[in-house]
Image (cartoon, rainbow, N blue to C red; front, side, top):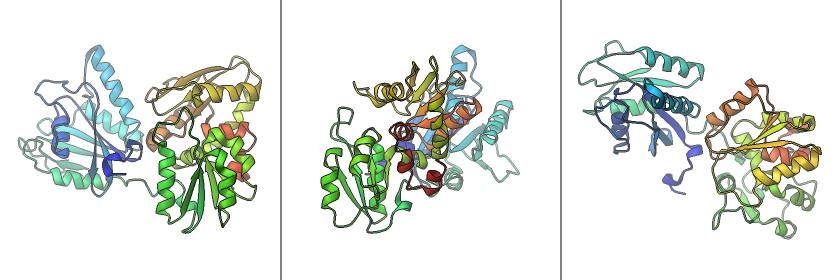
Length: 397
């Protein structure tokens, strides 16, 4: 996988915020050395968030986000400000672009307050330093000029010091040793992308290779033959959650078993919440509404996991008449209090900050939340086994 193929969800998201005509778009263009954002002297030129994937050392792969002005006005302006607020939920580092000729205004100060409340590391970039110099800059302020390029390299270096690429997180390489064998069960069904495997499977395969371990890949119907053909017992078997029941039957009890979805929930930082929330399935009553949410948008097949398979499992397991609502991509509902349970995907297509934001919103609304892999393992009676690779979590059950 080349740098340009690095998924957006594992890149650091760096947002540029500020008022109209502060020069956000000009600064983004200068920083990236590309004309990715339309620039003009007219206020409100940027009407939608604009993103650009690039490499920014020493961080590595990042997503640069240019946002609409936070001081936009009118009905449409309010919608644009709403877009900017939503971008903050997936921003790992923020750059507040202020006009050096004006200095900080009330909108800028409100943004700084939001950065602090959301624990987003930030810098203040005083643009147009060619027209006016800001004296006595603080440690998190920098003077730049999108017009002349002054201070751009310093800005890049300062951004690089705000965050790290992944915080040392690993999908599974910390669970295995060099020379271990890991069996990956990857069903090829109607929902599988033609000619490709999905992102969590790609990431697991790469993480195994990075650990100096060996990956054996098969479909669920070939698992027994694959296990019989191995000279040594594998360290673990990882399966697509949809094949949990079949794979569990064919995997000996002394071989740890888990799923890509469970590993992804751990990687995104919400596996503990998913395990705690899954018990709410037993409390569902007739007429309750369950939200099934995915972080990506894809063409749904006839046996789609979120809209078909999990609802069927819920109906069969609970015996209740439950209302199902779904969301996908960035369309996570703002009001969650009417849901009795949220079942989220593993979150492979959204970054950790946005995933944590969604979990926090659910917790604030008092709504239990779990994820696909945890819910499926629970309803097929193998949750404790599927968490065996995480002893502390398994002991909670």
